[in-house]
Image (cartoon, rainbow, N blue to C red; front, side, top):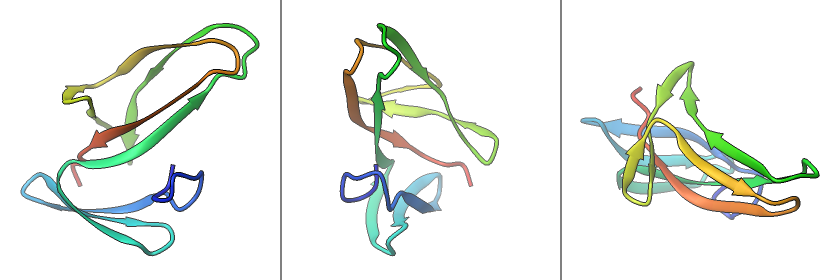
Length: 98
């Protein structure tokens, strides 16, 4: 999700200093100052006509990036079990390496 909680104006650039995110630029030109981890909102909606278990891995420029979810940092987020039509939407933290 973008800065306004809609499926547009996604983060396009992360400013990084000493391994910490200091600023995020969004597709609409909005800048947001950060301290440490850059948070984005991720949404998953199950349209598979059955219960599905989801796992999320993130890559930026073909490089694996850890995900901070609820203060726990992992290379994979999940399992996320969703019934048909169910939605999961949460803020996840990331720190791109470059």
